[in-house]
Each structure stands twice: as C-alpha cells, then as structure tokens.
Length: 539
Image (cartoon, rainbow, N blue to C red; front, side):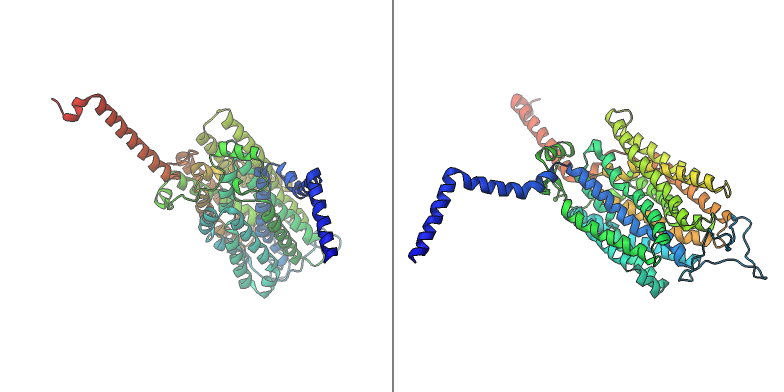
C-alpha cells in the first residue's frame, strides 16, 4: 500500500508539474490538432461545390444504372433476320445495308444472345423502369422537405444499386421477372431529383444557382456517356459478357453511397466542416442556412392551380420525350438501322451526351453572367434557353433520319442536335427553384414525375412503330419527337416564368399582412390623438 501511495503521489506531482510548465496542454493541443487535421483540410474546400460534385456523381450513377440496359439488351437478345422463302437474308429497301458476316468479312461478329425477345417485349422491359419511377417522386419530395435530402437521395440510389446487381438473375428467370425488377428499381430512383432540388435550395445562392444546378444535373449526360461507352467496352473486352455490366455499375453505386453519407449534409448549419465565411455568405445570399421546418401545410391548391408550374410540367414532358427517345432507343437505332458494331455503337451513342454536358456547363455560366449584368430578365432567359434546348434537338434528329445511310452525317447531326439540350439545364431544370425555394422538392417531384410519362411511353411506342427496324419507320419516330418538343415549348414561352410565386411562403404573407394592419391601426390612433375632433365626430 505504501508503494502504491508513493507511485500515485509521484504521478500526481508529475501531472501538476506538466500543468505548471504548460507541457500538459501542449501535448493535448498537439493531439487535438492531429484529430482535426482532416476536418481542417476538408474545410478548405467550398462545401457547396463538394455537394454539387457529389450530387453530379450521384445523378451519373443513377443514370448509368438506369440506362446501361439500353445498349446491353442489344447483346442479350438473339439477332433476328427476315428471310425469304429460299432462306436468303432479306433486307428492307428503306434500311441501311449491312455487310454479310463471312470469314472474309469478320468485322461484325454475330453475338449469340441468350433471350428470344421481340421488339414489343424489349420495349416493355425498357419502359418498366419509368412505371415505378413515377410513383415515388411526390413522396420523395415530401420526405426530403421534412427530413432533408441527404438520406432520401442516398437510400434511393442504394436500393437502385442493389437491384442493378440482381438484374442478370432476374433476366435469366424470365422477361416478366425482369420487368418486375425494373419496376421496383424505378421506385427507388424516383426520389433522386426531388431530393437534389431540396438540397440545392439550401446550398445554391441565387447568382450561382444556374452554375451549381447545372453541375449537379450534368450528371445526366455524364451518366449516359458512361452507360453507353463503358457498357460497350465491357461487352467487347471482358470475358463473361453482359452480366458484368450490371455487376460493375451496381458495385460503383454502392461505393458512392458510402462517400455520400460521409461528405454531404442537409444544410450548412448541420455541416461540421463548413467555414464560418462560407456559412455567413450562404446566410446573406440565400436568407437562411437551415432548412425551414415550420412551413405549415403544403399549399397544394396554389401549386396545382399555378400556370407557371403547369407550363414547366408540360415543357418537361416534351423535353423528356426527346431525351428518353434518345436514351433508351438511340443504341437500338445505331445497331438495327445503321449497323454499327457494339464498340462503335457505344462510343457514337455517348457522343451526344458528352456535347450536351459541355453545353450545360457553359450555358449555365453564361446564364449566371447574363443575370449578373442584368442583360435580360430571369423570365426571358429561362424562356430563351428552353426554346434553344427544344427546337434545335428536334431538328437535328429529324435531319439525321433524312441523310440516309451516311454514317458520318448521322453521327454529326445526332451529336450537334442533342448537344443543344444542354440549354435546358439552365432553364427547365432550375426553374422549380425559381418558382418556390421552399417547395422546390415537391415541384420537382411533380415536374419530373409527370415527365416520366414520356419514359413510360417512348420505348413501347418505338417498339410498335419499328417492327421491321427500317429507316422509314424510324423517321416517323423522329417526326413525333420534333412535334412534341416544339408544341410543349410554345406553352412554356407563353406561361413560364422565373419569378418567385406568392405562395412560396404563406406564413410571411400572413405576417406582412398582420404588420400592415397593425401599422394602419397605429396611424389611425396617432391621427385621432393629433385631432381629437375626429374621435367625437364633430360636424
């Protein structure tokens, strides 16, 4: 016991000596610095741009897992040829000629395929995703506004990754099982855009809104580029064939979910690594750095009777008709009509989205500059950019169907035309934030959800209109696309706006009206005190 007491006394005297000389605090300060080094390094980066980059990666992953089936299905199914009575291969006179596969001409090897699915069945499989996708937009918007967009988005993409990994198993079970799995996969991914809009409302200052939104939504183009190009390379060079497309992309989606949960937060006030300078800047420009949790009941009547909201919805339906026609069916056109190899198909099908990405980033910077120098109003800018993003793509795709079998001209027209869809990301995609920052998630849910009607319809309609896979049949598809893009854009030109709507914050309206009434009463009372004759009604 004496020895123990002696040792304890020596330890206590040593601690007192360290405290007296400052060595104790220097040691602990050093340890604290070591633990916060990572936080300090992370705080050096602008957290709103980290969120935008991670959001872009999330959208890209979502689009990759959604769109990779479009090119992979061309190698999953058995090739079908129309044959004459003598057994010779017959080519439709309206279709581009395909070189026969012979030992002397092995440039286009025949893929065996596992499944005997006709064009209608393939259309049902490709459209099944959007039947589930449409159902979870509004719930996703409501959940993200109530609980924040971080976990709403993360859980949605996590479920999509799981079902992507299960796709080969479902396909081998049968076409009905694959349709059911794609439907469920769509349910999980329906929360993506509403959750991102809720996050951007908390993180994007008004003069950076086009830029940050375009960075996030540029993931659509990046995802389509990766889905087509990487899928074709996997199909071409990795032994084992098409199942590896889903295994690789599903695994990448799981990795993104982990990084998203570690790096991103619902709003600036809950972010542990954000600097005070950035937090103060966001508070001054946005008006608040924390999600507004006391919005009151959702103004459904005001939203559903709003002309600008319905103009945006109609314009989005037209935009999505053109986009989904290209996303789901351009690889089939390049394979069935133009007869490109799988590697060529992947690269050429991805080029329009690469150019679209460049346009979306550059035009968003242009939009922010035009608003900053006050060259045009926000409404004029949104309408002008939406028009360029609708009419030019329709004309480009229509012209591609009239140049015949000139592969270079077809590739250039598709690429240039679809590139102009990048203008929509500084107009239609950001317009829900303009109309109502507080309810942008719900508005985006309505806009993107109803727009999914296009995704539900286009693959199936294309399958019905192109049973023989001829150029003449596809020309009808592109005429329909051009007409829908143009007509829906006219509605947006007449009724669309970029101004905040009065129902964005009803509580502020009630407060301001109460303040006005109180001010009016104070003026009346002051007038009465100044002129007593008015209070007794002297004639």
